[in-house]
Length: 87
Image (cartoon, rainbow, N blue to C red; front, side, top):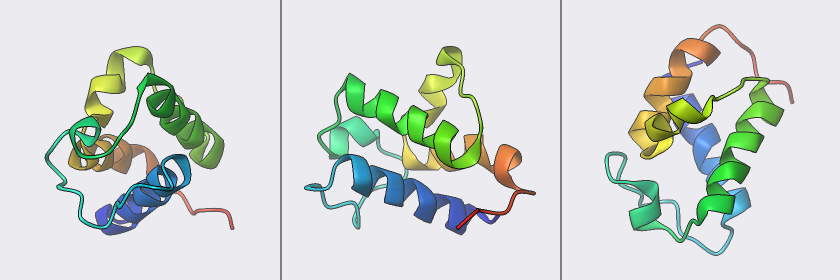
């Protein structure tokens, strides 16, 4: 998987969790919570979606890596690089 593809997958998850938010103009380096209305439950939903879609566990100590879109991609890239996405 490429960085761009992982970014698009994260945007899909965000759109599913916050369907009323415009995710098309997110700044990759700004905190997601500062750009769209995400509460702590929404954030946990993101983590759960990552587990469900990619079968990966994100330990609580690593949640800070998921604060920005760029951080999500950088964190997930080594885990997902060799994986194929199941349709």
